[in-house]
Image (cartoon, rainbow, N blue to C red; front, side, top):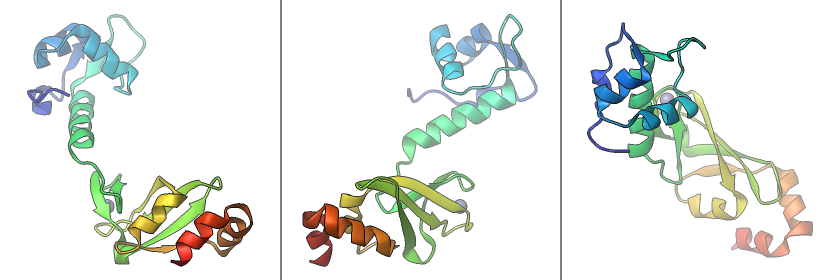
Length: 156
Ligand SMILES: [Zn+2]
């Protein structure tokens, strides 16, 4: 993502063609087409393709924040706050999806919206001093039989 793109250049109440958007932000038309492919909503299926200014502004703004603000391992991206947030009460739940990976869930410390992300079971240990993670008892049992090495790591 280049630095110079200012989301406020998009005029909220105007629909723009791909060419106009490209001219507005000084990017190639193919870049704009790539944005459309990557989730930038267009008005309808009519030709030429039209992009609503407010939608465009929002898309670029999200693109910038997503790029700038990376979550630390113990942080989650809150959809409501639109930025990485720590877990409320430093508490999280781990829900296994495979024997090595699962979903880490917590409430946003800012707005209490539930947040989640995929996390590798092996890396959970590294979060011990940042998060109080609840792991289902069933999973501990699975590890005992399937992956004895991993289990002994947890007991250290
Ligand atoms: Zn939040």
